[in-house]
Length: 289
Image (cartoon, rainbow, N blue to C red; front, side):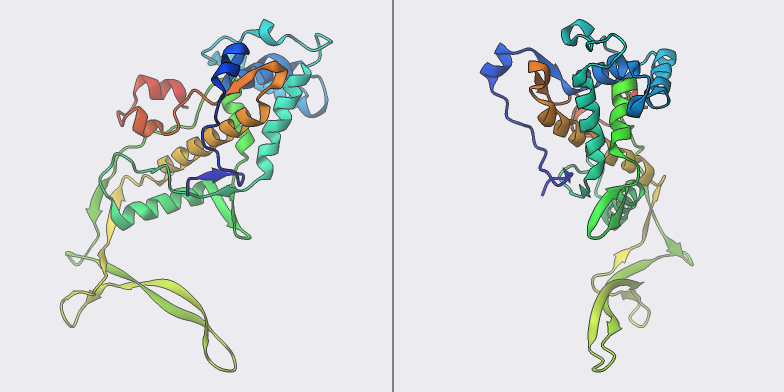
């Protein structure tokens, strides 16, 4: 099942080509820039007051990192030059609503794409990365930081999460100069107080080396360490994927706003595949923090 965010399959939406030709189009990044950079800073109070948006606008002025000019005349301004355009408030509300939904972990976008098979060590690095970005609660995964913050960062500064990660070396874990082995065994960890029958089982890790036979147990795997640990970098890749999904969601939600076709994000879904693995590339530096 592909990764989903907010319980919705976020595949590429189908666009009617005739409709696109007949109507003015904008991609979701441009719409967000217009709303957060040109319109929302006008508000002097309420949810979009100086403390919320004014400080972000000051950051934009200092950094000058938008990279693309926004055609203000295409959208116009609110009825009062000091008020945000109503459509900008609609955009902001849609962005804030993203935080109300959970995130479903999936495996369609391989975080380790382009690297050799890292086996169990790679799987554990991916699991650690998910734990950095999300936490489990009541059968769902939730982002530790609001997705709206990542979306606003793209809108205001034009910066996506970093995705370039140094490919780690696979180092065998040794004990007394010999490779260590581990094995996963399903064991009963809870029993019925009356009957003694197991009521809960868990997979536990045990030593995988059979000392008596001087060989690994069947199904055992070697202990490997990844150097450097890629988990933190992979967490940014997860943030990229979830943010891209959020922008695709917004493109669907806001399509038709102001009589315009809102296109999905121009940024690639899996840049570490589409842009390659060259560390510090110009494209990566332009798109990420």
